[in-house]
Image 1 (tube, rainbow, N blue to C red):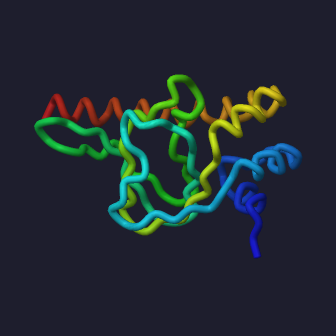
Image 2 (cartoon, one colour):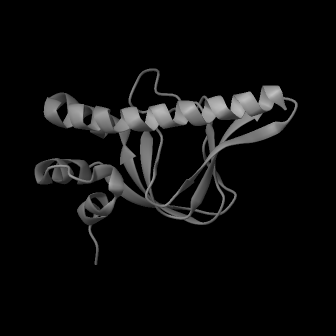
Image 3 (cartoon, rainbow, N blue to C red):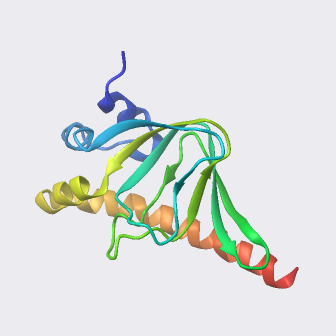
Amino acid sequence: MQTMRTYLEEHPFFEGLRDEHLELLSGCAKNIRVESDEYFIRTGKEANYFYLIRHGKAALELYHPNRGPIIVQTMHAGEVLGWSWLLPPFQWHFDVRAVEFMRLVALDGECLRTKCEEDHELGYEILKRFTHIITARLHATRIQLLDLYNG
């Protein structure tokens, strides 16, 4: 049987993280399941978690009043969803819909922020890892906007 810590250490996002930090983070984590076509993140809603995708696929979407939802990025197993828990006002910037059944590890943002404040080395490590995610998300959004306005 796998433990929450095992799920964390097996996920690429936490590769190379120190054992004591994995142990701390496992106290903020829980398993969740999301059914196909279910929205589990909504723009403007409170961002309390970030998610490690263990199984399945999700569509990161922006809503356009004339075109409806526009897929900005498709996320797969081994990837991370959500960085809005990290900075105030802690609100989602995208909608996220399960394209197929998903298994995820949800990490509680408030719990994680507290642990990062108590252990600045952990906080810096988490921030470095999320900087890559934020950069990739902005790049994907830029490409979609170029397509939208040039198409």
